[in-house]
Length: 270
Image (cartoon, rainbow, N blue to C red; front, top):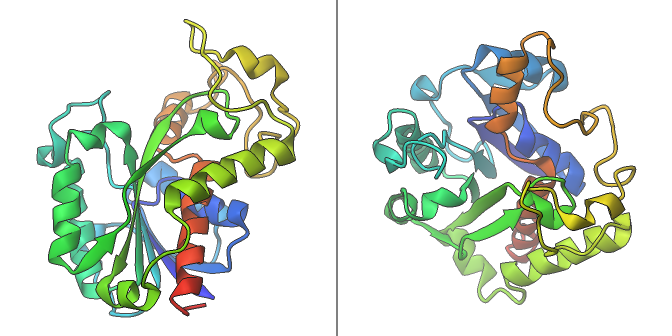
């Protein structure tokens, strides 16, 4: 079993992604400073240690195999300030990098919006190289590709320590191939329309009427019914929208998590 620490946890998108993937990964630490998000995490993941501030967290080397990191995207998103890692919130990445350097997990998964390509990606990859991590080519996974009624592109970086890289050697299956296979499997299994269909001007895909809402995007204890936003007059509606807007879709995260499990098997870690 792999062990997992979640940095900038939000409301638990990566943790739900681990469940979605059916991965043999145990989450042992959540780091999140938003009080509303903390309440969600306490209810959803009781018993998991919750630390409130990454700036004073002191990692222990080798305690966790996997770090997931979705640091604030205020400066990296095309919808934000576009100031990259100079933004006061997005520069929190450097605290995550400190944790990587000290904690030395075998794998690091980083999630960001597409905008980071021009707003900080070079610095993030450079930082990983400094602390002796290699990475596969970053890949973009859209929520729409896996049947969601919204687009929401997310870029994922999967990095592994130099030691793991040596143990893996040449990877038989490229990540882009694995992503393609996962997306095809999702649509085949859930009976959803094929990805890549055109979107209407209002942002709603033409195939939405044929999407199996009762399948992959069904209502469960861990997912809300599909509404066009959060109903008006809902208590703390604004805070809810903000938290959802900052979160990774669990089904997207699951694809990255499955890649980590595949690489861990190649390296003989699990």
